Amino acid sequence: MVGGSTMYDVLVIGAGPGGGNAALHSARAGLSTILIEDHDEIGTPVHCGECISDVACANLELELPPHVISKRVHGIRVIFPDGTEKKLTEEGYVLEKHLFERWICDEAVSKGAELCLGHKVNSMEKMYDGEKFIGWRCNGKGDKFPIEAKVVIDASGVAGVSSKILELNPRPHVIAGMQYEMLEVPTDDYLDFYIWPKYVEKGYVWMIPKSDGRANVGLVTENKSQTKKSLDDFIKDTHFKDLEQVSPSWKIKGNPAFGGTIPISGPHENTHADGLMLIGDAAGFTSPLFEGGSHLALKSAVFAAQTAVKAISSGNLTADSLAEYTSLWKKEFPPYNKILSGKSALFNLSDDDMSVMAQCFPDEMSNMGPHGKLLVCLKILLRRPKLYVKRIIPAMLSFGYSRAKYYGW
Ligand SMILES: Cc1cc2nc3c(=O)[nH]c(=O)nc-3n(C[C@H](O)[C@H](O)[C@H](O)COP(=O)(O)OP(=O)(O)OC[C@H]3O[C@@H](n4cnc5c(N)ncnc54)[C@H](O)[C@@H]3O)c2cc1C
Image (tube, rainbow, N blue to C red; front, side):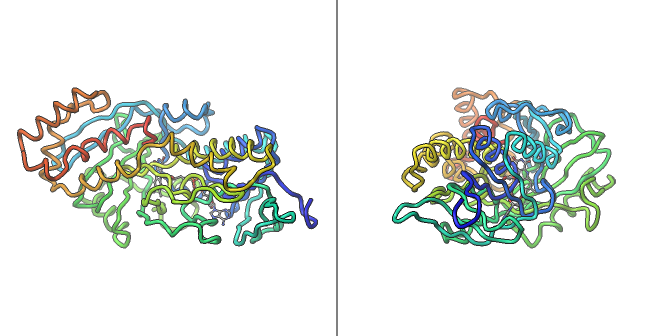
C-alpha cells in the first residue's frame, strides 16, 4: 500500500488478446495483477478478421474451448489480379473473436487477476522510494483510479497509451481495415486473400469464412478515406454482390460495417522502459504483408509476463532489468524490415507483373523449400527478365513470411 491505494505487481492496460494473455500469465505466475479495459465489455467492437493458426495455438499452448471457435479452416488462398489462385495450406481456426478475448480474460480472472471494465488510463507518473524507482501511479476515468503497480504492461492496441502519455515513441503509421459480415458465402474452408491493387492500395481484400455460411468480407488499405468505397466497389463487382450483409450478433445498432486501424511502421524503437513493457499493437507488432497481429500480441504478452516475474522477484524494476523483454521478442519475431521490403517490392509490380509471378508459383506455396524457390525465381526471370530489377525475389519471399510459423497468423 502506497499513499492509500493497493500496490499491484502488474497493471495491464487494455483487455484485447495481448492484455488478456499478459494478465493470465502474470496471475498464473503468482503476481498480483489488475487488468483494465476502456470499454464496458471485452472484445467489442470486434476489429479483426478473427483467424488464428494451429501453429499459433500450439506455440501459445492454447486449448480453445468450442464456444470460441467459429470454423475450422485449411489455410490461405491468395488470388492475384488475373484470377490466378495459389494456396498456402496450414490448418487453423476462424474464431468468434469477442468470445475468445472474453475467454482469455475469464481465465486470467480465474487465476486471480482483477478485471476492471470501463477504466481508461490517461496519466502515468513514476514513483520513487528515495532514489529507487518502485513503480507507476496511473490515473484516469474509472472508480479504481489511482492504480499503483510495480510494472505496467501496455496492451492498449493501436492507441498506444503509454507511448503517447510518456512521449516514448512517435505515433505509428496505420492502415485502415473494414469488413462486413455476409450470409450464404460459398467456401471450401480456405481464407481467400485477394491482392487486387485496383480496389486496395498497398493492401488486400479478404473473405474469411465463419460458421452457418457467414463470412467476414473486408479489406485493409493505405487509402484511408476510400476504405468503405473500395470495399463496396469490390463487392459490387464480384460474386459477393448478391449476398446479404448483416450486422454481426454483437453489433446492435448502426452501420453493419466494422473495423479499425492497424499499425504498420513496425516494432517501436522503445518497447520497454522503467517498469514498463509494450506488447501487441501498442508495440507495433503486426505481420507486414497481411497485417495479422493476434499471434504476435499473444506471444509478446507471454514474454512480458515472464520478464515481469523476474524483475519483480529481483527487486530491480528499471529499464535495464526489463531489457530482457526486448531481447526475447527480437530473437523470436521475424525480421520486419526484410518482409516490409518484400511487401514494397510486391506493391511496386504492375498487375501484369504480379500475375506473371503468380503463374510461376506452384499451386501449393507452403512447401516450396529452397530448391523450389530457386526454380520459381528462374521461371519468373526467364519469362520476364526485367522483373529482377523490380526486386521480384524479395516480393516473392514475402509470401513465405506470411506463414504461421513466422507469426503471419
Ligand atoms: C479490420 C481488421 C482485421 C484484422 N484481422 C486480423 C486477423 O484476421 N488476424 C489477426 O491476427 N489480426 C488481425 N487484425 C489485427 C489484430 O486485430 C490486432 O493485431 C490485435 O487485436 C492486437 O491485439 P492487442 O491486444 O495488442 O490490441 P487490441 O486488440 O487493439 O486491444 C487493445 C485494448 O486496449 C483498450 N484500450 C485502449 N486504450 C486504453 C486505455 N487508455 N485504457 C484502457 N484500455 C484501453 C482497447 O479498448 C482494446 O480493448 C485485424 C485488425 C483489423 C483492424
